[in-house]
Image 1: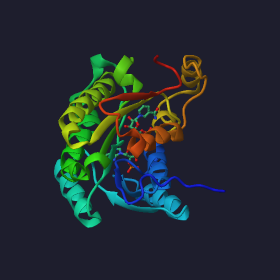
Image 2: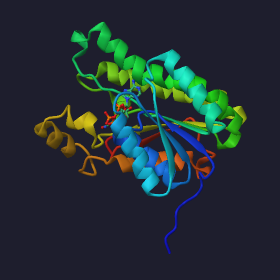
Image 3: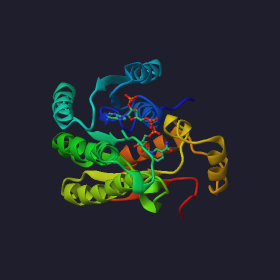
Image 4: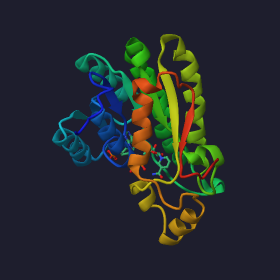
Length: 254
Ligand code: NDP
């Protein structure tokens, strides 16, 4: 007998950067668990529409909504509209992120501002606006932030990215403490190396092989490896988990 989990049935989930990569897999997983998913994107409308099509073809519900998480005014107005139109927001997954690499000694102010404003500012401001809805969802409310193993261990050429992802961990723990009195759980997921455009465009074949050697499970992760954990954290089964960083990295950091 085929069995679809329905633990998120009736819930509204907003996933930033849901058009591609890890975000797309998260949207699909949340929809499989019964949530109606708002798929955010900023530039690739076709990719966001494709995520919606995949979800609808599986009998789920989704809509694509454009906003740039580093644009505070646009983000605030759009998330308020989403909350009003959908009758609330129960789950926010702050997944949108960018990686610009370069040695610390050569980092330019625009590089710093772009990465911090998307990866950390985006989490801050999306959470602030969405929380007025999520707090009303009480024990069903969830904020799940995508950090990175690089936020915990650092990396050559990734000082700003690492700082942004470490910042996400601090923000997660503080929000978890602030929202706990309302039953809302806030957690971070810290992926290791995951097969998406973010790495395929930035890593040579040699670098890939060297990195795989350093991963105990000897493979690069898949977006679905992260999405399953996010769907679990969003579910009623995870209602006693808050302020945690869940590592999904093939054992890179134990
Ligand atoms: P991709 O580059 O494949 O996808 C990035 C997604 O973020 C796209 O949906 C993109 O939208 C969206 N996005 C980028 N900038 C903005 C913005 N300003 N506003 C709204 N949306 C935006 O990335 P991944 O799937 O690999 O990464 C997803 C998250 O996981 C990121 O936070 C990343 O840092 C993190 N991560 C990734 C790892 C990896 O190895 N891949 C490892 C650890 C963490 P659009 O399609 O419109 O451009």
